[in-house]
Image (cartoon, rainbow, N blue to C red; front, side):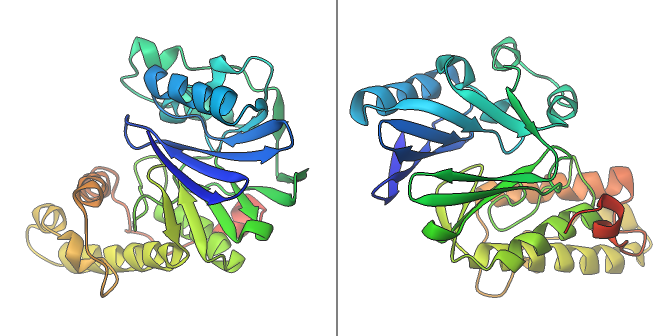
Length: 275
């Protein structure tokens, strides 16, 4: 388990399974978690860290979305109240090829939100807001006092992941994040990143759209789309990783399968009724 201490009362723990993470914010003798890792082994390491090292009791767990690679520790803190969006079960049920272990991660949330809530926790005010992009149950958390934005899987590396979404929804989610103007970001996988990650993801989405349009003008458009290199879509100066290459490939396959980027962008914020 990779542990990053972000402030005297904020920690990010990155698990072995899928680099899925959890963020811990302490408040006196209690702790709040954001997301809950991907495997039972990682979840047990988290429990030991919180209870034995920090000597805290988990009071709340906020789930940015309800895919099973972020739920593994929910059962280990039975006294904690679990906070999720009201669409949580749509996200969990939409998964495919779950293992028996992953199915067992599910725990019914205690508190459901619609548009958002504001929580005072320790020395921080947490703005928990609905931000559908990766999924229709995604919530993000802005922590101005820590100059920190928790984006879940609305950003993956310097990309967006379109398998469960659309370009329009992804763009609207990124634009909401961009307006927050935080200099530090934590995604659902990996550790602390710079605030320019949001602009990088917006650039990727725009460049992917442009490259798909060019490919569609060719005689063999599907093959041309699948041949779009990650480097053609990344912001200048940003180097692609193997992790990003995997999700870029999936984006290309999803684009071909579902005909993404074939319609003009819609006013997504008007459609969803949020801003």
